[in-house]
Amino acid sequence: MFAVRRALQALRLANFLFRPSLQAIQALLIIGKTILNNGQPGAAWALLGTTTRLAQTLGLHAEKGVAHWPERTRPEARAVWSAIVVHECFLSLCYDRPFMLSPSSSWTLQHASRNGNLSYNNAVQLMVRIMLNLTAEQHTSLPRSTELLAELDNAYYVTEAHLRSRQQCHSLQQHLEHLSIQLYYHFCISFICRPAFQRLEQVAGGPHYMVLLSRVKSSLMSTSKAFLEFLALSLVPLRSWSLVHIALSATLLLSVWEETRNDPECRKLQQQVIDAFQQSECASNVTGPKSSSGNMQWLSDSHIRALIALTDSVRAGSIPSRDISSTTPPPRPETWESAGLAETSSWPGQNTTDEISLACGYGFANIKST
Image (cartoon, rainbow, N blue to C red; front, side, top):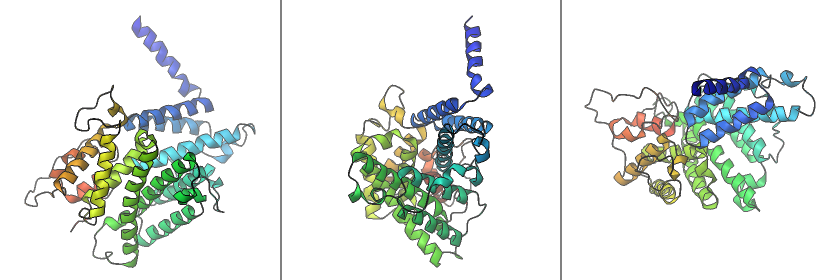
């Protein structure tokens, strides 16, 4: 009888697939974000795929798909699809996985004007449009990267004043929006500037390369600083998987990248980030096992391992490079969780290229260290 009840319940849940509705898609989107922020990014990634397909079934991915909808429901449909595109963008960037959506699917983001005074939501949407264009390209050259960086800067400079300057914030909401946009903005800069991590003789020292190199270093440091400032005001960043991932990946990269690993200011930032996690109610016991009943539920397993790796790195002064006399590469995991941060606890046995790839969560296939 128990099995029958479970089977009937499963059939009722299947109604989400058989009869999709705008309300059902909204519910799935909220559930997915809740699962993600509860430290289960893999499940959230899978559910997002289902949610996106159901939205496409209703025609939300194309403007003509909702043209026949009642006028009063069209704004809601556009808002739901915009939320899906933004969620898909940042989760894909953090996971370093292919986008399910193409730039043409971001039709709802076309309403993000560039005429100035962009609101928080419009600023995020404009960043997403730029990142969608970047990921749609098979190969990004240094000149193209600098073009995208300039485009991102132009979008940032036409946002509302409080999003660009902390001094222009006059309410708690504005302070939170400012720090949130700073994290996303500098995260996008780091992603665009990935070619700066390639120490290739034919590009190192060139004007485009030097621009990217300078920007990526400052953006990584700004990410850690914004995260710390955010924590001083609210626990929101500790309850957001994407913000935790952005902060940890940036700070972890500062500890392994040769341009920053020995920088005193960077070392200070790394220690401050570690202290922030250790002192928060989110991580009362970083080195212990994850407990579903404790505060550790807010961190995913991969983030806990990343935090341990960062702590070990700071204590040791630097992460040791792999012995070049060893000819047998370390075994790689069969599955990668949370944008390459799944195996950060095994860094001492890997080379610098793997360390940087794992730290950032980006696909740095051609990074060469000196």
